Length: 251
Image 1 (tube, helix red, strand yellow):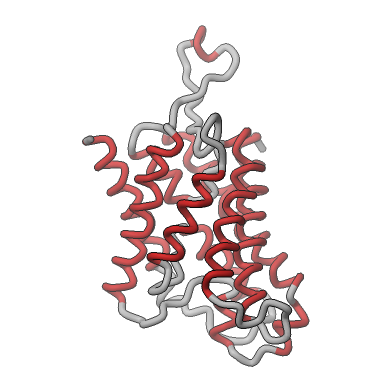
Image 2: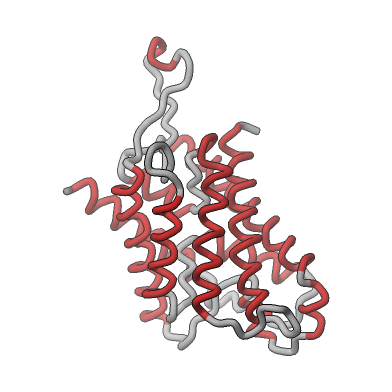
């Protein structure tokens, strides 16, 4: 259990707790924030990313997203050997965060009849189900996320003690930190949510959707987990991230 794995668990857990938490606050019956709207949801998600990045950033670079991890690796900014560790931490963190949202809003889940709304507190739900259009939405949204991150963060390879002398690089990409700080990444997520989030709920993060969807299936929440749709918020973000990496490398 290295610092990368633990940091990605904690950062992603906070991301999902606060991100899905704001959805629950808006969607579930009887909450103080019920029906407060898309501006609240998109702002809450942006701030959730800020919190996750601040916590995980110094130790892992705060990817918090398999699409970001794969995009960095595809661009040559991260060793492929580290990718499984990042992905494992992100998935575990996403599942823990989803469990905490359910625990926190347990009473409100019980009194809410809308099964689709309750599922939305875990994973994404398309506004208009259309396989091609939904996939394109996730591809474009994630492309914007990863492509802009390359310019915001200036991903670079970091060196641990002794790595230079041994000729071995510990390739941890630093994302959204250093002199830039975590604030621009939060603004980026906010912009994507406001402009591109209306079609699919902008998963733009396979772990953010898959981990909570698994928890929705496990926890005593009534309704289908809609596994027929689940591949779209996995494949779309990965395709978008790789496309962003290819364009960035070419430029």
